[in-house]
Image 1: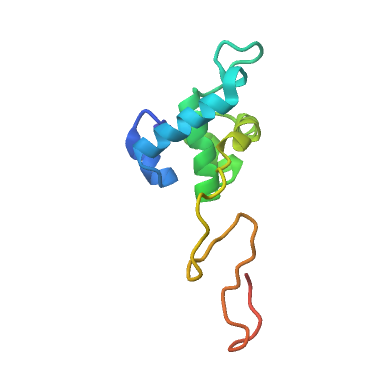
Image 2: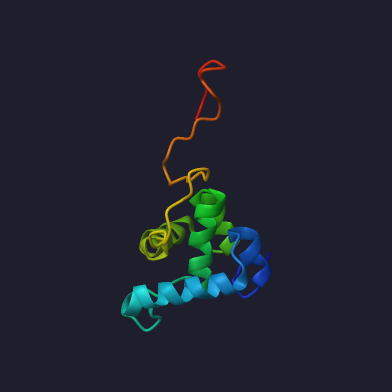
Length: 128
């Protein structure tokens, strides 16, 4: 069975929406932020995936909204390992603040924000 890996750049763009150069910059930022805690020589249980694949997993988790039970077989690891990877690496993938303010006609969606799907003045109340 084929498992996803960052070694094949086609997986990066399809599953995360990042171009390979953007993914490399993200990898560098994670490596710097994570430091020794993410190094393969750290004490304790070894990671099931290398750092590139762990970053791909977390980015794919946020991009696709797949569950941990769905991601596990895609990467050839257990759901428990997926949980550990997401818990440890998610803060390292947090984006920096935007350098510019959005224009008045731009829409900005922040994780967890409820965005109405219909105009309630025109139609009945609906889901977000």
